[in-house]
Length: 228
Image 1 (spheres, rainbow, N blue to C red):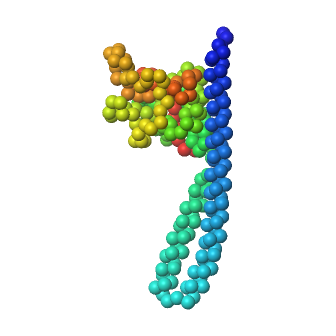
Image 2: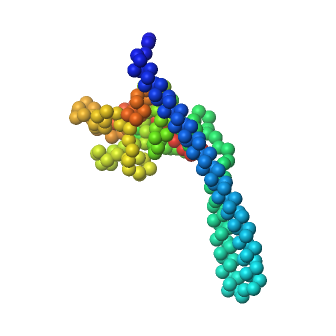
Image 3: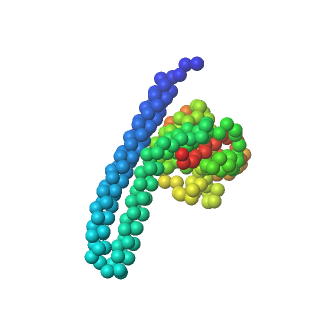
């Protein structure tokens, strides 16, 4: 089977976007790591200087002032520890469970089984995760290449509560979307389709237009997401 020039071009463009997004994400993580390391170093130096100053002040102060200085010192140490904790979070080695794929600091799993949207979400929860919430273009590009071509997978987006008001499962409103042309259409008025209140992503289509709404009872695979 031969692909048309248009299909080859589309695949090439999708791969280029995926590679660029991956490169940008990696570069961003390295920049964040270096920034946090610099902040931590500055905080450590400042704390050393402040300790010396506070020690000198304590020797010349009465008890109330000493109490205040002690509280102030503890506050500074708490802030410093927070910076160190954040820095450690970004720099320590992390990994995903077997079968999961890492992107950024997040692990993703494309299910082997198929089922309803609710079944997919329950499976994700049983794994300590949840259906994926797509909150960046980079993540959208990554997910668009996660599964084989023409795979339909549930994502954590629904308008079950209010028809036409799409929300992510974490409660956040949908701001940036990647709906296919003329979607979502809630079945287009076809009684055989019923209500289409759950969203899925379809691989092999244009990265910026590969979402569709479907009946939540339809049997699809699903994508789980959790922090590494």
